Length: 492
Image (cartoon, rainbow, N blue to C red):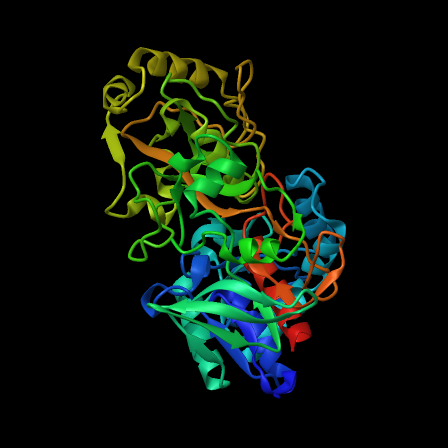
């Protein structure tokens, strides 16, 4: 009879959380087997689709240079990186989750963030500053904003490519096209997994199992059941394989559900994007420069404060708001004063866009929108802009509107200088917030009596309790990294 020492730590999934768990388990000397449902060309879960931003504590440029040794003196001289302290990270987490985030999980996430970045750098993962999306040049100097400074080298595809190469070099086995369908559970402990590969079904014995297989955003039935009616109409930003298998398997053996099961990360996404993410386009169906313009719905009216906060703190909740509009869509409107500020994703070929030299002409081109109401809305909006307050994209500039039913708080520019550009957006769901309850000290899954289930751990998007209603941009990859490392180390 073989001992548990002879059996591998089995990691279910092959995204960022899974690879961090695998590297941590390997570090402890365990044999590690990654089982990935997707074929190799689609592997990596949502991590492959991400733009790669990762939020971490840093107290100055020295912390950043430790994780990005490629930073040159010249880059440092022309950049104001600022700082992002533990207190700021905590403030952001509690503020955007309306103080619902689990304090112990949040403490682990924030407190371990910088050390986890150093650990990943030590494993060979590379990072770069997000100049393209998180910094504007003011008076000859780049200034970062919103607490988000670092991204994985090469974005999501680069992240998975690096992880895969590092894992293989460390002797970690990866089996693609291998779907885990059930946990083997003897009433006390998890001792392995049942898998389906092609037409074959078989069992794999394990020292322990780490579930890193994502949320249930690609399961239209679960979306409608848990998020509510209408959510079957959303597009999925990422992988088609995140159908909640890991969550279901754990619940089947008595694991405790936790977190915001009716909540999710959902953004403005090109209205004509496909049902699931397209790796040839990646994250570029997103349309996140709305703070510098306005959004109108089918009635021609604005419906949200586009300048309520930096994009990082509103984009993950505005997808839900767009889904609730007539026709599940909106149009983002920009005039030529700000089109040079639009992010790169506005310049791709596959984009639902119209242009016009006048507002009246634009009104006739906005499919599904009441043209007269739209023209009236633009006039009312322009009249309400505080023109005496200077526009500054790097700070909350308080250049807002006065007297409107829905005021804009910051970055309010008039829409009067043609040519005008408009982009049609719908709702793109990234990941679901509900999931499994874990011990924040070990990553071990808890049962419905809140007792640890021996042999079962979890990390990544299927952990519940961290995010509610919204999330600060870049926190998803940080959560996967912190809790993946934690769970993998304890599983070994």
